[in-house]
Amino acid sequence: MIDPFGTTSYTACTVPNPDETTALLEESDPSALLGIRDRNQLPDPNDPPWGLGGALLVWLASILLIVLMPVVFLLPYAWSRGFNSGMPDYAQALAEFALTDKTAVILQVVSLIPSHLVTLLLVWAVVTRFGKKPFWAAIGWGWPRHFPWWLAVMLGVVLFAGGGFIAWLFGAEKPTQLEQIINSSLAARYIISFLAVCTAPFVEEFVYRGVLYAPLQRLAGVPGAVVVVLALFTIIHVPQYWPNTGVIAAVALLSIALTIVRAYSGRLLPCIVIHLVFNGIQAIILIIEPHLKPLIPSAERAALAASSLRALISLVI
Image (cartoon, rainbow, N blue to C red; front, side, top):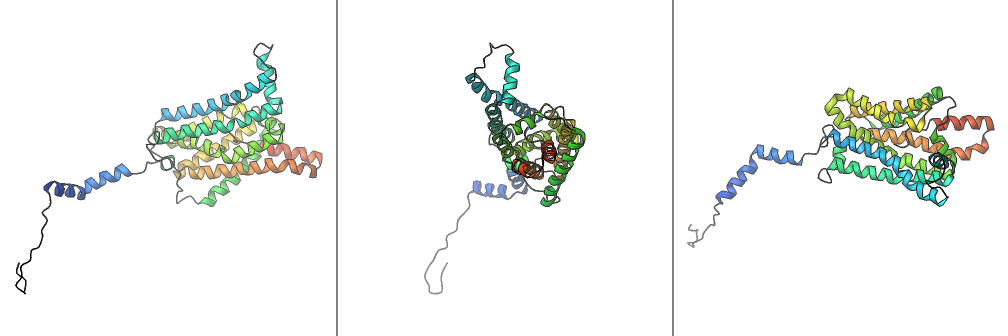
């Protein structure tokens, strides 16, 4: 073009590459954008990427770890104390030794820590497909808007009171294996208190209301998933609390309440908070009870110890 001063100037004009133009048009296509959004969409905790088979494998592995890990910790110590398979009534003697020797009891309780850690690793592997999916979104870590946090805290307190009452009402004076472990030493009491707050609520909820519940709900619906999770959670606690049917009933109450909360809220985090409050109360009772004994008359002391220990439900899976 010619400018007013009579000088010649040129304006550069860039002609787009046909291939680039096609790419831009494809990117502006709403269907193409929708495909990108779908690929980046977070997983739905109620429609998980894992199936029931993987969930059942995690559940079975968690039980095997709880059963076998204490044996791995116990046997070397038992052998150092003269136990060997050639002894008469070896199995019975070893079982009695495992419940009466303070060090043996502590070793078995400590073994629950690696059991829980390995279980959490298995949960992560199944939920994320070994790191290919986001863990927290898939497991349901978010907080639902229609379920306030204070309600979860209140439910934890109410369930503890209700569970303790049921355990006292139907359990009478029947001691459990867990009570023997707790009363064996202060160290065992403190370790169990640690497990009750720091690992058990997360492990149990990740396994039962997280990995197991989601595919069960997809296959059997909400009622079927609630019933199956309730049954599995209760059954695995029966050996631990037998013959105290009151404590077993309290375990069932806790399980059904947590599973219904999971079904109603659609998320796992409220269940973890409820379980954490529930176990936190238990842990406080366990820690302060030995220090209160000198201040309580003997008869009342025995009654308080019995009632508080029977309220100890669902500490470990």
